[in-house]
Image 1 (tube, rainbow, N blue to C red):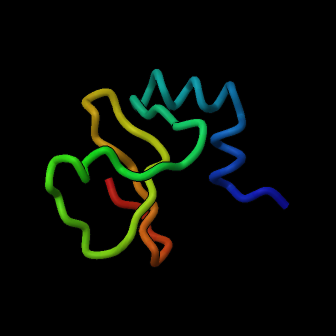
Image 2 (tube, rainbow, N blue to C red; image 1 turned 60 degrees about the vertical axis):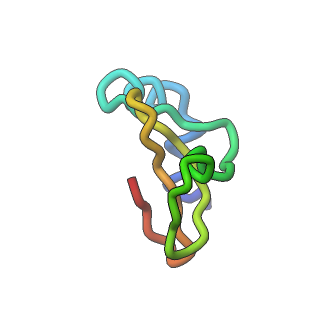
Image 3 (cartoon, helix red, strand yellow; image 1 turned 120 degrees about the horizontal axis):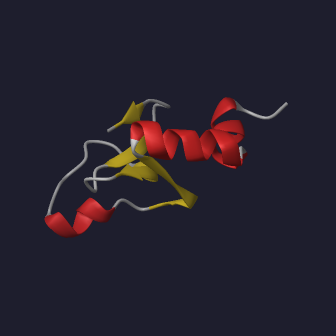
Length: 68
C-alpha cells in the first residue's frame, strides 16, 4: 500500500493542482532544510520535502509531524 504523501507527490495531476492552487512545490527527494544557512535552530531533526512560492519550507519532524 502506498502512503498518502507518496501518492500526492507522485501523482502529476494532483501535484500540479497543489502547485497552482496552494503554491506548494514538492522536491524530487527530501533534503536538508535551506534555513540552516540562516542560523535558524530547530529543536529536533527535520527533513524538507516541499517549499512554497515565498521560499518557506515544509518539513517532516522526527516525531512524524509536519512543520511549515
